Length: 93
Image (cartoon, rainbow, N blue to C red):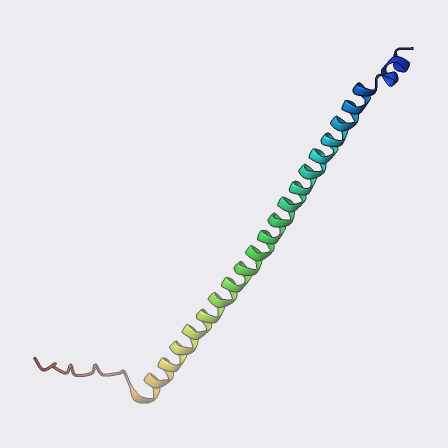
């Protein structure tokens, strides 16, 4: 019988509907924010993984260049002997 009385009070019913709609909007907004935050975190993790992979590749390429330069220097030394230091040129004052 109490429920019948509550249903008969239009002001209370209207307020409850407005409150429920407001709560629904707030919950929807919060869910949307959480989804955007999760998307942003996933994007950052993906970009971080790509950056780390690129840095590893660059490091491997640099090591390869150092090895090639060392091999070229060793080949030169084998053919021509050790390099002689260059004479310093005095700059005119």
